[in-house]
Length: 209
Image (cartoon, rainbow, N blue to C red):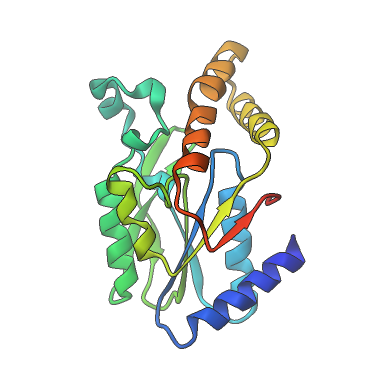
C-alpha cells in the first residue's frame, strides 16, 4: 500500500494546484481502516513537503449521557448518534482556511469526545477528514459531499470488517456476548448502510489497511 499511497499523494498535490486549502474525505464502514489510512496519507503528503492534518469525524459523537436520554446508547456509532450540525459547521470553518480551528477528538479507551483536542491551522494546506458517514446521502449528512475536494471510500470485504470489529471490541475488554451485540447489532448494519447509501467516491479502495 505504501507505493499506492505515494501515487495518491502525488495525484492529490496535482489536483490541489495552488489552492490554499484542499479537503480530502476518507469514508467507509466501521473497521475499514479509515484512521490508519488517513494517518498514512498525511505522512505521505508531509514527506512531499506539504503541511497536512487529520480531522476525525468521531470527535462529534454525542456524549453517552445524551444518548441515554435519547434512548440511543445501544446504537452509538449510528448516523443519528453524532452531532452532524456541529461537524458540518467545523468543516465549513476549516474549508475557509482563515483562522485556527480547534476540533474534538474521540478517546475510544474512555468512550468520549475530548473538546478542542486538535488544532487545524491556516498553514495546513491538506485536511484529511475521516469518518463513516462523510458521503452518506441521507439527512443532514447529504450536505457534506459538496464540501470535499476529493473523496475516497474504503471497502474491505465484509468478513475482514467483521473480524477487525470483533478484535477491536475484545481489545477493549468486552465480554463475548457484548462483542457479538456490538458487531452484529450495530457496527455491521451501519456498515451496510454506508456501502448502500453513500455517494460514489472519486476513488474506491477495496484492500486498504
